[in-house]
Length: 352
Image (cartoon, rainbow, N blue to C red; front, side):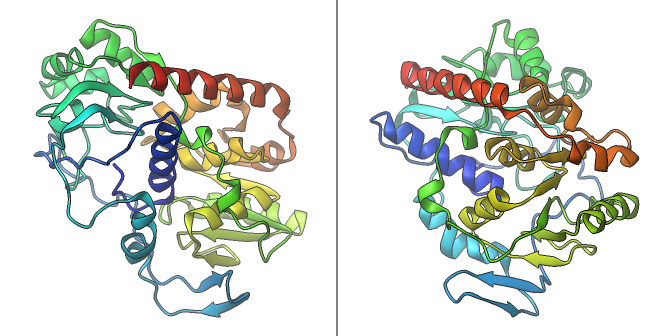
């Protein structure tokens, strides 16, 4: 999934690559061939592209400038993917000692995205590796019931049985592995938690007194926007969206992945409806609130539960301001994080 053009995908790929290299290994990304979809694409899915963004912050020039249109996806091709070491030409079934499948929704095969579909290569088929493992893989919104309804449950089970080690990130994925592969997976955190990006992040940002809204541009409802704006105005904070255009925000910024993390770190609050928005918030010990969607309910609620942060979910919009004002006690959270990071590195060390 390293070629998916969004911040979370880039940062988890960057982290996993450098974490494995730090263990003494050479890393090369392997591409997968898109399979025929099992389900049809639903209309009005969130768009990953960003167009028509009004404000761009350029840290080198130290100023804001207005832009009529920005090809955000193009920046991944020209700037960000080269940082991962991704060649322009895709490489399939590369001969390697160990093939690591993951992270994120690599097993989410019941989705209508035409650039993913039901790719059996994401389940290890036709690989050219001596050893096959996963790391923090997720079935996303794909459930055991769904796999059975579409008649591919047994096939998925046969492919999972061939893995030498299976690591998942959420209980829904664990249920599927137990039921179909008849084995107990191990659970690990998203790779973003494993890596210290600090040397790559700007030490400061050109803003203060702001709230980051980290969400897909077409998922924040007018009602949600009103509640978010009301809290921001009451606190005297500006609303900032990064990487997507939010109609109700004061600033819509475009930033590199590492600049994004710096904006997150320096924000007063975070409001998000994405998995990685919650990951960034937890990693940098922010006061945050999460709007859970049907598409990410399985893995996002699982993430909050693993850190004891279930109360950060906004189940009633009128509770948003109270959730944001209720400070997170990050001592226990950071202890869990440190333990899980060590567990993840030990898993990789033992299975590569």
